[in-house]
Image 1: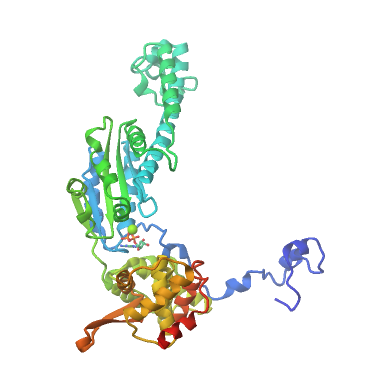
Image 2 (image 1 turned 60 degrees about the vertical axis):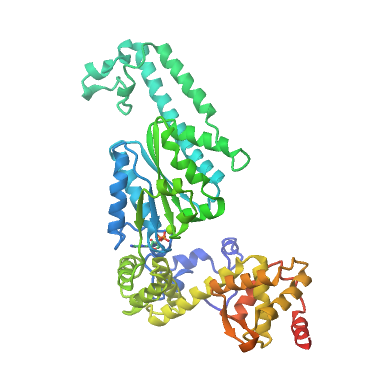
Length: 517
Ligand code: ADP
Ligand code: MG
């Protein structure tokens, strides 16, 4: 770009400027456009989308056993039988969601191919986290499908009706035109797209067809969508029940992050879903539960536990070699040839293997390293970029954890932070509690007991935000020494961004006041 003021497209088009954008673009000698400069740096990525969590890979190395296992159980659905319920366990990033989605896509594809009514309904229970919402979402999905089914049926019936009006034989099994007309010249016969075979033989008159159409219209009118809130749960359940059972089908209900649902809303949903089959007339329901928490079934009603856990599939963590394979597959598509220096993939794999074999972390690292290299206008991604990516992701995680802490925990953390900020290290619970109380006063917040605050400190310890070690003080007993395990500045910024905490002013005097005591 030259020294001239930046020109914006509109004004150029109005010819306020001497240089017309069109002239620049049409210039024969230099066909450099606005973005050429930016694009001309040695590009790193070929297709970055492939590294994003939303991308569902078609190939899942090292998950063949689990995928085959799922398929062997679910194939029952294609035979019109009810598949056993499945419970899938494994830590985050072990490929549970990706594998389950892959299998359901295959299942639906095959069911369409053989025309068997089988569907998979996916629900992420971290988002849809109450019984009401789960049932409402399922009900509405099936209602939508049922309406489409009615429309298609009515269309077929109308076609049959118009055939029957001119030729009553069309009502009989085998149909009139189907039998007598050469398939090659059926231009004035029935619509070849419409296979009415399964309707023939069911009606004896046009009036009966009309009645059926009328009934279908009425049924459709009664298919009322469940509102997002407001109905009693019984009614939502009944609506869902009727909607699934409206036509013959096997419905596989996939509840991802099922532990979050149970944690938040108990096991009523699972109880209701798992006993449905004994009451359904036309359809069958099968449940796939996916959990990051290996112990969540301890909280389930024993009946739910045994029904849901008919089949269990475990997804073990990946080791560094497996992670490297996974990264290799994805990076071949994601990056330009030669964009990765040799040690990048092994290092990403090694870092992620330390994070309990988390493939998501491995992919995040690789993508972030690529982005850092891009920003540096570097020719390739290096080990150094991976290390910086690791730091960045770790910091992002801390920021996110701190940001989403409950207010009371934030106040406790803020107290610890203020002490550190003022050069007081390895503080004890009593000292934290004093500052905490002052902060509560300042904000008019409820003051928890010291015992509760001790619990909150332990929680912060578990989240890796503070480090609390028990030290012996000889005859004075034992006490906890608490220190911050996250960067002070960033943490402070996150806490102060919380509108409830931003009212805190002049905290330093309080800290000093503590020493005067
Ligand atoms: P989980 O549901 O167990 O937390 P995901 O299925 O969401 O884990 O996987 C996390 C990320 O890692 C996703 O981007 C997914 O595509 C990828 N991934 C996991 N396992 C594999 C694998 N075997 N091959 C390729 N990509 C994988
Ligand atoms: Mg998942």
